[in-house]
Amino acid sequence: MDGEVHLLKGADGVAELVIDRPAKHNAVTPAMAAAIAAHARAVDADGDVRCLLLRGAGDRAFCSGTDLNALAAYPDLWAFRNRVEYSTAIRDMRKPVVVAMKGWALGGGFEMALAADIRVAGRSLKAGFPEVTRGWVGGGGASQMLPRLIGYGQAMRLLLTGENVAAEEARALGMVEIVAEDAEHEELARGIARRIASFSPVATQSVKASVRMALAAPLPAGLAYENEMNVLCFAAGDHMEGIRAFAEKRDAAFKR
Image (cartoon, rainbow, N blue to C red):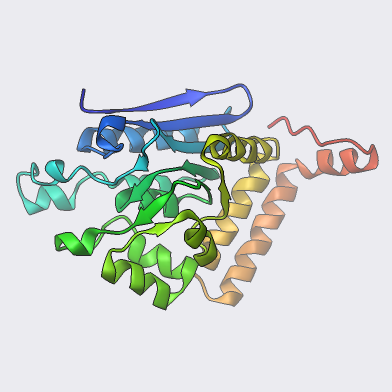
């Protein structure tokens, strides 16, 4: 079997996207990349899903990136240029994405994590960007997203040397937000996803859109965009449930 990508839907508003090729450290083939992109689009279009949890199968890796053997299979450079870029598919999602990862998270695998919104790591995490050691630069966003998270100098250290970092250093640098024991990290990430899914999807997607705008726009434009997102939330009407819940001293129950 060349590997599969599974989408699991729960009744709690969380869908789980599982990269399932543990014998190959969950390395991604072109067919798997297409499946990741298709599932990402499906989640964004599914009104029953409010948050995505992304994880890898098995105990050894979250994802080791693109299968190097598959890279040699493209018939020409034009076909490679027009490949399905699975990290971009995750980054383009409107809905919040939480990643649970342990073991190896390399190259395109960690680029998928960078494309997500919240990263939860097991203590066995070993993260890095080995592309330079093979003769190329990654094409899934590391050179653009990593400096935004950890600064120019540290990003250059990792991208130019190809060296790996363990979970605690990754947290100290700002590459991951939370580190937990391997046996606990997945359920911790799932709990975060469930909490996000309990809120108004208009609010959570507006938060994501506003923060992503901060990465791309000058401050005045970003502030204006944030205000428009705030107005959109009020226009959607979910804020009234939040106000009622506050007055009644209970948790809000957003139905949308």
